[in-house]
Length: 118
Image 1 (tube, rainbow, N blue to C red):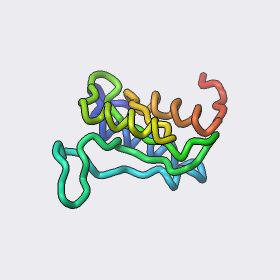
Image 2: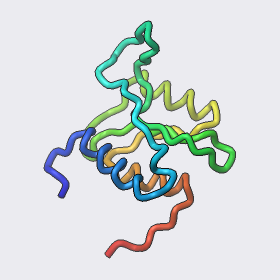
Image 3: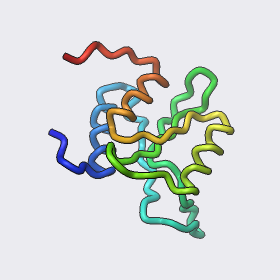
Image 4: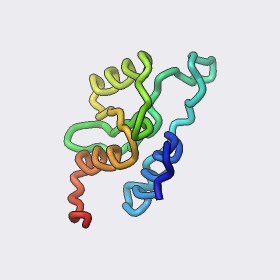
C-alpha cells in the first residue's frame, strides 16, 4: 500500500520490485549519486539520472530515468541538462513522477503490453 507522501526512494523501490519480474529487470540499476550537488574527483556528477536500463531498443542505446515523487519533486538545472545530453546521444532519458509513470515509460520503451488492470 502506498504511504501518504511517498518518498522518491519508496517510488523507486516499487519500480525496481516490479521490474524484477522480467528477465531484463535484472539489468535495471540505480546510480548512487544522491546528495551530491557538485562534481567530485571520483566521477560523481551532479544531475545524473537515478536509474539506467542498459537494453538497446529501436536504435536507442538504453534508458535513463530521473525519479521524482508522484506528487512534488522538480528537476534541477543540472538534471535537465543531463536528460537533454543523454537524449541527444541516443538514449531515452526521462523524468518520471512516481513509479507508475516510470513503469509506463519502461513499458513503452520495451514494448510491453499490459493487461488491463481492474
